[in-house]
Length: 471
Image (cartoon, rainbow, N blue to C red):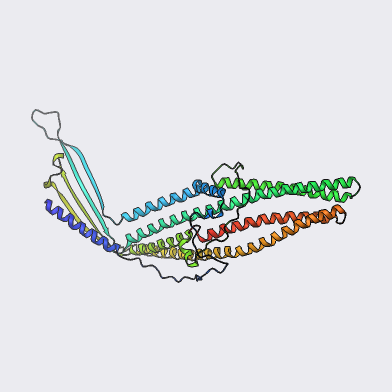
C-alpha cells in the first residue's frame, strides 16, 4: 500500500513539473506596432557632448549648499515614501502571480469526539439510565492540487506583475529625479531672490543719497521743487520695490523648507551668490534616451504588462487542465494515525471549458487590448515629449547665452551712463528726468542680469531632467 502511494506521488510530481515547464517555455506574442517617432543621429537643438554624467548630477554645479539641500529633500520627502510603498505592493503582487505556477499543497489534522445515545434500549440492572457510546477519531490529510499552464496564462500573469513592479521602480527613480530638480530650482530661486533684495536695498540707498543732494540744492535755491518731488517719488518707488523683493525672498525660503520637510519658518541659510555651473552638460546620443529616462522605462514596462494581460485574458477562453490528489489516514486511536494499513489516496484529473460565459471572457480580451493600445499611445506620446524636452533645453542654452551677453553689455553701459548723468546733473548740464532714467536703467539691467543667471541654471537643471539625470 505504501509503495503504491509513493508511486502515485512520484507520477504526479513528474507530470506537474513537465507540464509546468511546457507552460513556462511558451513565449509571449506581443502585437506588432509601428513607431511614429523617428530618432535622429544627433541632437538638432544645439551643440551636444556625447558623454555620460557620472555620480549625482547636481554635484556638477559645485555648490555644497545645493548638495545638502537635495540630499535632505530626497531623504525626507513623503511622496518618495509613498512611491516606495507602491513598489512593495507591486513586488508582493508579483510573488502572488509567480506562486500560481507551483502545485498547491495543504495539510490538515482533525481530532474529534462524538457521543451516541441508544434510546429505547434497557439493560438489566441499569433501569433509569440511557445506554450510550463515545467515539473518538483522528485524521491526517494532504491535499495536492495543480493546474497545467498549457496556454501561458500563469506565465503571462507573472510577466505582467514583474513588468508592473519594474514600472513602479522606474517611477520611483523618476520621482527622485523630478524632486531633486525641484530642489535645485528652488535653491537657485531663493538665492536669486535674496540677491535681488540686496540690489533693491542698494538702490534705495542710492536714491536716498540722490534725494538728499537734490533737497540741499533745492533749499539753496539751485534746483526747483519739481526735481525734489521727482527724486522723492523715485525713492518711495524703490522702497516699495524693496518690500516686494523681501516678500518674494521670504516665500522662496519657505518653499525650500517645505521641500526639505522642515517647518517653514523662513530661517534657512542660503549661499551668498549663484554658482557658475558647468560649461557644458554631456547629452549622449538621442537613441539612448529611451533607455535612461526613468519615466520612459516606466511607460514601456506598463506597455509590456498590458500586452501580457492580453495573453492572460485569451488563455481564459481555452480549456483548463488540473489534477487533484488527496492522501491521508484516519483512525480512532492517535497512536495508529501513521500506520501504513490506514493509508488512503485519491487522484482526480479534470478539464474545464468555458461555455456560457465566453461572451464575458471575450469582452475581457477586448478590454485588455484597448488598455494595451492606450498604454502604447501613452508611451509614444511620452517619447515625443522627452525628445522635445531635450531639444528645447539645448536650444534655450544658446538663446540664454546670447541674452546674457547682451544684458552684461547693457549693464556696463547703463552704469557708465548713470555716473555720467550724475556728473552732468551736478554741473547743471542735465535735467532730473535724465538722471532718474539713467539710474532706473542701471538698476533694471543689474536685476535682469541676476534673473538671467538664474534662468541659465534652471535651464541646466531642465536639461539634466530631460536627459534622465545621472546616466
